[in-house]
Length: 254
Image (cartoon, rainbow, N blue to C red):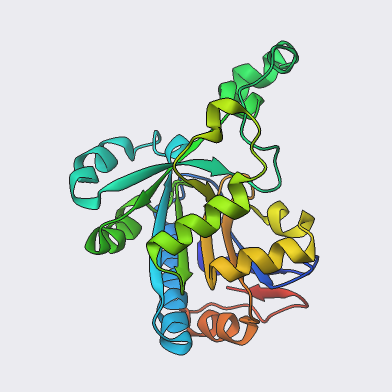
């Protein structure tokens, strides 16, 4: 199934903000789906920036997802992109920590065999925030489609964003191994927004205007904004190449 035949789903069970999921059949995404997804995301980011005014673009790469064909590309481009490493904080999961003995002993061997260690137990992950402005655009083009890419549009400058994220997402980390990390970077899934309290969502949306992130857990692309972007999303869906199926309740079809 091509991406234009799939659906963009509006997530209704969120206390604050506007959240959508653009599904893909798998990661790495087939080229037929990836082309449509890239076009939609590029158009969304471009239109959002045009309407909301000057916003900084931040690009983040998930280290655990670059081993499916992206490692050489990332390593080759690192001198140009100038990535800065930070600790991943996934809001709907426990704070990053070294697994305790009982957690390791409790791993289902079948899950380990099927998914590997990182799929069988939550282990700390690292992210790379791209710091070169030109490199950010190139990174978006070359690193998408593997579950490794997230994009943030924010009014904050890089230093302000780092401080804000450290305060919002670093405060809950108690493992001394990770208390001294220079930066903590969020990686959101749909469950992050569904399970969050309204006051947490308000704080998150103060740090960014738009979040667009690939999510292997959700098998799709998570889109979140503090403001209602329904009309924008609908217009972009209508602009996609046909065939387009008529929208259903809470669903915008490709």
